Image (cartoon, rainbow, N blue to C red; front, side):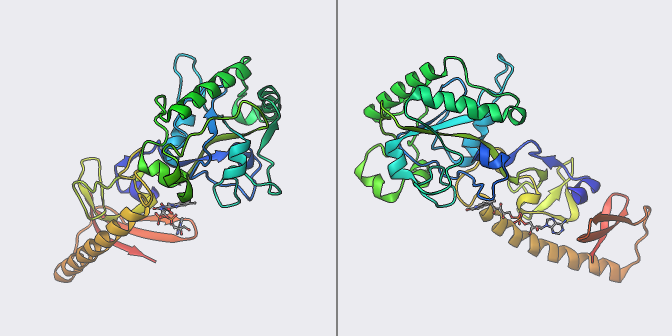
Amino acid sequence: MRIGSSLGAQLGNMNYAWMCPIPLERSLARHPGLFGMFAVGGDSMLFVNKYGRRVVNEKLQYNELAQEFFRWDSTAAEYPNLVMIAAWDQRTQDHSAGTEFSVLVPPPGADDSHVIHGSTLAELTDRLRQRLAKYRPETGGVELARDFTDQLTATITRFTRLAENGVDVDFHRGEKPLQLMLTVPWRSRRADPTPTMHPISNTGPYYAALVTGGTLDTKGGPTTRPTTNTDGQILDDTDTPIPGLYGVGNCVASVSAQAYWAGGATLGPILAFAYRAAHTADRECAAVSATFASRSVVTTQPERTISMPGTLEVRVRLRRTTLVAVRSR
Ligand SMILES: Cc1cc2nc3c(=O)[nH]c(=O)nc-3n(C[C@H](O)[C@H](O)[C@H](O)COP(=O)(O)OP(=O)(O)OC[C@H]3O[C@@H](n4cnc5c(N)ncnc54)[C@H](O)[C@@H]3O)c2cc1C
C-alpha cells in the first residue's frame, strides 16, 4: 500500500476482505484453537439471527456466507445478523462432529467451550441469552429478541418441512455442486438426494454456537486489471500502467471483487500472474538498463525513498512522473 500509494496507484476493493465465519467466543478469547468455518457441516442444523429467523444458505462458500453477518438493515438501523446462532440436534452432533480444522461441532471429550447446550429450545434460549450478555461490550449489545424461542421453533418447523420436501425454496441450500463438495462427506452424497438437509428433531437435546464473520486475508490494494493487462502491472488513476511496478496476490486488489469463485481463487491467479509479471519486469528492466547505457537521464525531481520498517527499502527516482530506476536492498 505504501509503495503503491506513493507512486499514484489506483486503489481498489478497499472495503472488502477474504472472509470466513468464525466461532465468536474463540475469537474474543484469542483462543489458540480459533478456526475458520470453511465448510459448515451437518444436515439437521441451521443458522438463525437474533430474531430466531433463518437468513442465509448455510452451505454457501465461506467468503459469501460471511458477508451475511455484515448486512445492514437500513430500516431498523442495525446489523441484525452480526452474531448468528448455529443450532443443531443430536443427529448432527452424532454424524458431523470432528476435530479437523474448521469443524464447529466438537466430538465428546473435545474442547466444547464454544458450544451451548439445552435440553429444550426454551432452555437453549436462556443459555444463549446468558452467553450473549457476557459479550455485550464486544458485540455492541447484541441480544436475542423477546420471542426468540417461538421464532426459532417456527423456523425449525419450516426448515423441517423444506427438508422433507427435499428443496430449500427459501435459500437454495445444497443446490450447487460446490456446496456439496465443501460441506457433505463423500459417503453421504450418493445415498441421499438432499444430503445437506434433514429434519431437525422436535425433542432435545439441542446444541448451539455463536458465530460471526472473520477475516482471512486482505482483498484490497493497488489495482491491476487482468481483463485488459495480463502482466500484473499496477495501474494509476488513468488506467495507465505505472512503469516498474507490479503486484500479485493479497497485496493488490483482488480481481474477484466481493466474490469467492471456488477453491484456488486466490492461489491460482497468484501463480499465473506472478509468472507473467516476472517475465514482463525482466524485459522492462533490460530496456531500462539499455537506456541508462546509451544516455544519461536528467531528473527534475529528487530521489525518493520509501521505507517498509525493518524489511524492505525501495528507492524510487522520478523524472516528471515516469519511473526510471527502482533499486532494492
Ligand atoms: C487458513 C487459510 C487457508 C487458505 N486456503 C486456501 C486454499 O485452499 N486455496 C487458495 O487458493 N487460497 C487459500 N488461502 C489464501 C492464500 O493462502 C492466500 O491468498 C495467499 O497465500 C496469499 O499469498 P500472498 O503471497 O499474496 O501473501 P502471503 O502468503 O501473505 O505472503 C506475504 C508475505 O510477505 C511477508 N511480509 C509481510 N510484510 C512484509 C514486509 N513489510 N516486508 C517483507 N515481507 C513482508 C509475509 O511475512 C509473507 O511471507 C488460504 C488462506 C488462509 C489464511
